[in-house]
Image (cartoon, rainbow, N blue to C red; front, side, top):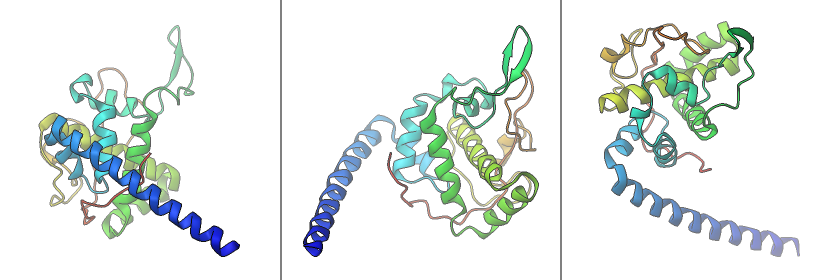
Length: 211
């Protein structure tokens, strides 16, 4: 009876996998018709596959909605925004402001970015030694989001060939955003920060779990 029950469960899993994959392919087909260029650009980011690219594409909707990169990463819940009242800081409890799906997508991309990426893992270890493991991963997720913002604004793909302090993506564009990583919202009028520093060797077609 146990074997029969397991066999039924396996058949159900296979059936659901087929159904889910068919839905994913249909959505991917529609996404390519809707905005093939943006979808392609997003898939050049290390760690971003079909599912993450579609999540980011449809949750962003239009990158021109965000005047600055700080607005974008705040919307992605990748910074701690201060809670203020009458000009006084009341803490930083506004953790639920923004888009939870983008936070998940860029956090997932950060994990996949590190998979099989020795240089990226060394960078994570440096961040972890200074900030702790959880915050180090959050910083990488934020930097990937910054890369996505610069890429979509400039309509250019991710460039993994650049090395050095501003390496990772669109090095020429990073001068406008600064260099040192931050995990809080920038002050109004200040420059925003951080570029990926790891040269990636992650395969571009890696799939991630769907929501």
